[in-house]
Length: 236
Image (cartoon, rainbow, N blue to C red; front, side, top):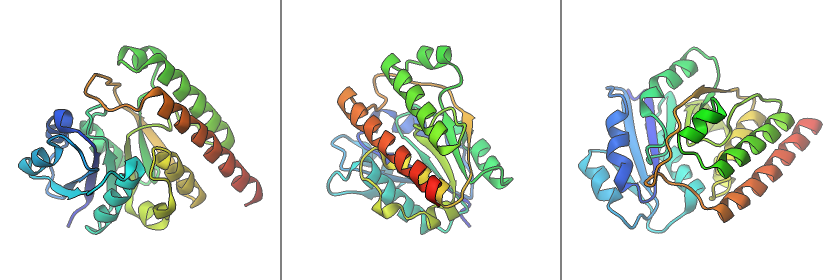
């Protein structure tokens, strides 16, 4: 029986994929899936060489569209838990068992890997200053209107109880980066609890990162999703 499925939403991840997979703790009840979003490098060939189960998009469907395919295929294994991990080596896969333990003891239903333990650590880890500031502002804004007290909402390492992915209808969510924000707000709407652990900050040239203009678009959409959720809380 598969207890945990680790999904890797990949786009041009050839340079970092091998390091990520090497650090995912081995277990007989863990399955790794990679969904390739029409990469133009050798991501698919490398993933198959590493023995990972691969699903390929024939055209780019976007970050959110990739995750939709990830979760649909992960649930086919009927796991207890699903971990979403960016395959760009920004996040430490060795922390996956700790995230699963938090779900196992029912501390929460969703666990986020937060990169914000301190400003000094985040910036020393290479996080661009403008990204740090925008991350802090958006997180504060989201906490205020949602009633949460998370240190980061904008992370690419998340663990879910499978019931979250079965109950939340993510199929109608955005195919873009705001998918992550929608997923968390929709989890809260469904009554699930969100927790977090701290993970090291690792920014480097090969790590994926959206540009300034797309970051601005993401920020505006995040504000909009936050206001929609505050409206929901007011009238539920």
